[in-house]
Length: 251
Image (tube, rainbow, N blue to C red; front, top):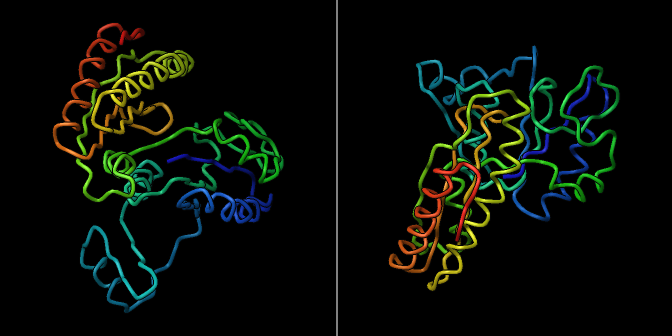
């Protein structure tokens, strides 16, 4: 899931800009938006069953009709929303608000003191042309869904490994992300070169940006259990080598 952060002061045009991006991204894959409401609390309709369920202590409440589902969860941080959006198959997540969050961001209008700005007052087309500037986030469920693709019979194996990064400065952790990500891409390519037609994704979870510990998520999908196990074993062997060195990988 590619995360595109749009930030600016109130009245700068963030919402209008995001509305122009949605159909363009939607043609490329499922697109979702999360907006920071700030001090404007979202009011649930009084007396409705879904509201009453929450009032009785439910951790989540959903209403489903013939066209859509409305889900209310008690989580109230961006860190809690990312896994939810990834797990439902979102390919592009637009984030509005949270100006101080360390996500690479699109700045709309003037935003004094803004950090991690990668594009300033771009057109929607310029954002589409620059998607590689924005990071990926995957929950384990979202990663499994990604490798499964359109094949419901696909055999999927997943794993999680600690990333070999020390708790240094933010700059040192960013440097590690840049150095280690190509190694993980090579591990995935090695697994996909095995016979059996497997698809592999080896993803670095960047805790500095998305919260939690830095970690490596692995998902392998294949038509048969044997092919999935063979490809996952390839990932595992190479992951152990990479984790041992923290910086090098040999195929």
